[in-house]
Amino acid sequence: MRTVYRDDHEMFRDQVRRFVDKEIVPFHAEWETNGIVPKEIWLKAGEQGLLCLTIPEEYGGPGGDFGHASILIEELARANATAVGFTTHSDISAPYVLAYGTEEQKQNWLPKMASGEKICALALTEPGTGSDLRAIRTTAKPDSEDVLITGQKTFISNGANSDVAIVATKLDPTPSGREITLFIVDHEREGCSKGRKLEKIGLKGQDTSELFYDNVRVPKTEMLGDPQKGFFCLTQQLAKERLIIAIRAAASVDALFEETLDYVKNRKAFGQPLAEYQNTRFTLAHCKAKATMLRSFVDDCLGQLLRDELTPDVAAMAKLLGAEMQGELLDQFLQLHGGYGFMSEYKVSRAWVDARVARIYGGTSEIMKEIIARTF
Ligand SMILES: Cc1cc2nc3c(=O)[nH]c(=O)nc-3n(C[C@H](O)[C@H](O)[C@H](O)COP(=O)(O)OP(=O)(O)OC[C@H]3O[C@@H](n4cnc5c(N)ncnc54)[C@H](O)[C@@H]3O)c2cc1C
Image (cartoon, rainbow, N blue to C red; front, side):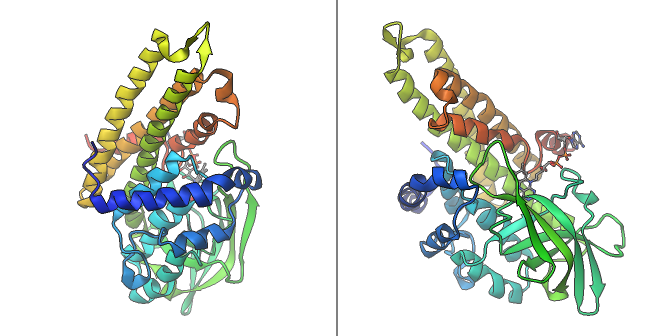
């Protein structure tokens, strides 16, 4: 029994599940072939109040809490619907505007993000740096009431589909040389362009792209938060991003456990179902025990987040272990599927490939260990 969710969360799960099964699952393979999802699915999700779940109604959002967002994350993970980058937009990017934006920025951007009219990316990583965010080279050069932004971003989720991005820059000149300043950059501005959609080994339906900013004139009114506190904002928000990855991991493991159990009950070898071999039973028992511990820890972290108590080090623990256990357990599930586990038409194969990135994005496992180790 899970206690972290209220009844309204579980009722919301039914709505989300219907949407995922009807509007996403039937088209997912096609989106994976195309390497991108159509913008219409964003508008459909927006119409049904499934985007930007934590954005209050006064800014056009559904006014839910992170429990609702977590339900959506779990349901997408259950279906291995990795093509739709709703979470990056709704739970990672838009909350920057809510948390640090001026009233004018919130009124201008959040309703369009909640409706799916404007897809928002988070543009931090550059070709030369990912883990060491303070080493970014994108600059924002003040010019009267504006800044001129120049730089290149890479590996940006929803990059090709994005209409706007939260862009990490350094003011030029920057007082400390290390401080980061965030801007909301409308991609219709002159000088913004998108590079190629990057070819990946997994998450094939989710567009991951390069973004280029060439002397893009952005009004200073689009600066997000204190210009000297961009890095602080990032560290505050990244704890949630890390928990999201852990929530996804736990939900994916649970879903694939059920799928595998079903498979081993039906598949026969040497005259009996695989489920009757002690190796199968012991493997699944071990997986179940680990999955239950993961679920329990992740739910506890979710409770902490809902009470506004989740610290960066605990979020890093959840992300580190969630990502690692997801990789390990999905590998066991795949093995129990035999050759079918290697076939793309089987969910376990795609989930196994897609899970690999969990140890890399949102901060690598090594960086998670650094964050945890700093506490002792
Ligand atoms: C599919 C995908 C989607 C992504 N989406 C986004 C997005 O939407 N927005 C965005 O801004 N970024 C995004 N990223 C980028 C992602 O966050 C970075 O790839 C990640 O932070 C790692 O940075 P890097 O690739 O530069 O690796 P590097 O920083 O070059 O790291 C290489 C290796 O060195 C290790 N390492 C680095 N520093 C240390 C250290 N101090 N101690 C020990 N080991 C260390 C790393 O752990 C890693 O193993 C995405 C990446 C992928 C693959």
